[in-house]
Length: 390
Image (cartoon, rainbow, N blue to C red; front, top):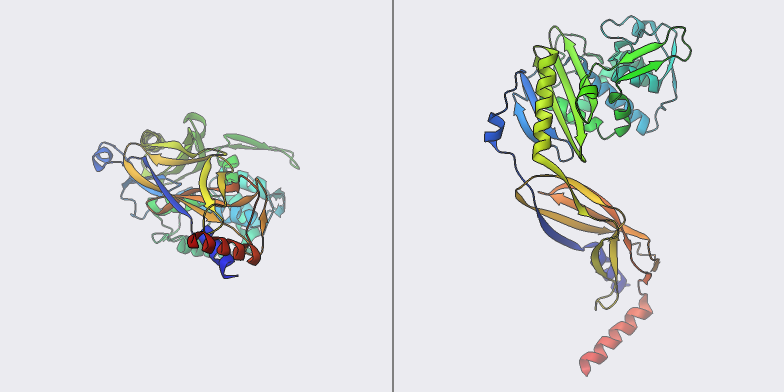
């Protein structure tokens, strides 16, 4: 039994490292960027690395960029199976009377969760946001409490939400940094990009007059690869945006707050996204069926299997600077299981940059193998003793 435990310990502690070239953005490069907005930030969202920032912790009114948190809580509820996209929601008088941007929903109208998400993501519908809040939490006030709890859990220390829409309210403030945090969290629910990345949509079922939705984020149409996330404007907040785009496997995320015009906002956002794409690349680290590691299954090492990659693994890295990348094999070996078949998943490989996990893939065995029982371990030990005696 001790031998079996020892073998399992060996298998679970396999660790190997390698190096590739990556790059770092210099402060001098940042000085060359002329951002007109009051506050801005550029992030590589996989690692969370901030590439550029300007007064990123200054607090401002976020306008409808607030709805990123509204969408985040909705997508969490969907992905956690608390609600379904097909659920039907009855529109309240409270939701219908919301001012500002709306879907033009009527009191008593029934719309699905997915349709409300489209209304929030595409048309920035305040009525859709309130209807969603009421459906998830019972009231907007209860939902706002959830928003602030989520903000605190995410470390959004610059943020206080007063409503789920972003309509001007005293004390309703956040920062570019905090918006990047909740935007990055929303990107973990990729279904939302189906809606935030849609430029035009028509909802007609059950209506005499169809709802025509047009995305307030014009970058979705005019900036290559842009598929979200949310714009905002009020007289207090001016023009704001959390914008994301993907090119050649690289995603960038930028936040602009307090821009004087929507043209300047879009110009600044485009400039920062392009800057990010110029500094980062997607690199294949592991190829499907690549041999990852020779794994011994006995003390002598004469019995082993080869752990292979179940699929390709690409990671986002900075261009040009040497950094160490660590790869760690984690084996899920059941101590009560003695036999594994060729092709069976036996764990996964994690990839780290600067101790930050940036990706992982499953690994499989290249052959059938057995983990020896007491009798086999006894025979192996007896053989070793005999060979040493000779």
